[in-house]
Image 1: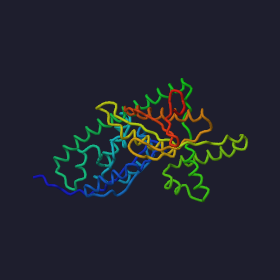
Image 2 (image 1 turned 60 degrees about the horizontal axis):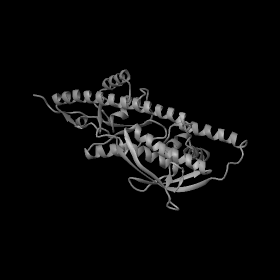
Image 3 (image 1 turned 90 degrees about the horizontal axis):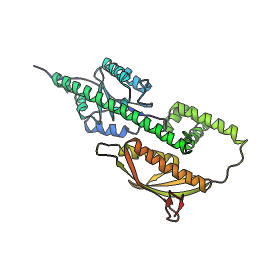
Length: 328
């Protein structure tokens, strides 16, 4: 007779974002709700800003080092754990097996049985085999998505370069300014990390950026006075096909971009209020063109479509004409 044997374990949540500009803590509320609905608790959170295509991730390896046999590694989605190539994914799986850690993914219901305190040996082995197959498949899909996005991004950059519009990655001046204000007030790097939600490498970049700005500002002529305009941005994001499920992620990416770069405020599911600061009409046109182009690229990278975009001048009610580059 097979007995159900209680297995003590801890649940350790892993949170990851690819870049310093993204919020690694974004999915924390999702994981908290997930465990709350199942009457269990998370013992610790491990968050980092690292690419899922890299095997060397300090917080992931700290989680594995802290884990005991039968502990649970909780993730929102398999792509948070891996966008690795085949050989590196096999290495990570081997490390997880050596630690006897069980993976639970919110988006893979068959993994939820690992949260049960009692497990039948036959059921545990059967679900384990099924989960291994599903995780392999989802990890392969996540890797393919990563490679396709990089390919499309490269194509977009080549197209922008050919059109003379590519400016490269721009410094997040507002974020750098916030970091340097905290440092100037006497805050330690650890406090800045927690307050701003960034990595130490971002703090280092912010310090270097401030030093470079201070060196060059004395030799530059005063810039022209900045103008600003409040606009209402309207757009609609739809999945590119019935097999695409990316529009939620697209909206999150766009929300982060307009909030960070344009003092954006979400009005509803399809509208944002933005403030665009510019030097002259040509600069305003360039910024609006870049904004609309960036939204289309974000949608395209996840096989979605951004349709019916419009920019309305909040003060006079006129709409931006993309073709002629002016208010009409």
